[in-house]
Image (cartoon, rainbow, N blue to C red):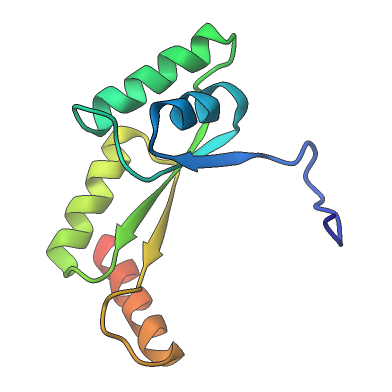
Length: 121
């Protein structure tokens, strides 16, 4: 159970995955998607297939969330490139992964998150 209960109703369900069956499940049943690995051909054709599955199920692609992940172990140029790529693909949210960046302690992770935010605007 969830306590306290979320205020938003219905509670949105977001699904992650990389296998075709998981991506189809996200498109047909989910309210949003956590991209992990695209199908053959990259993200643009993968999202196009997901859109088709969703629309075939009678659901609108409009309002379907996509939360991409930006790897903060790169630098400002890579952050901006990744951010703009996901923006052009229609991502509605982006999370920043600071794991693997060789950081020590919460303050270093927070500093890097601030740097990423400043770089991508």
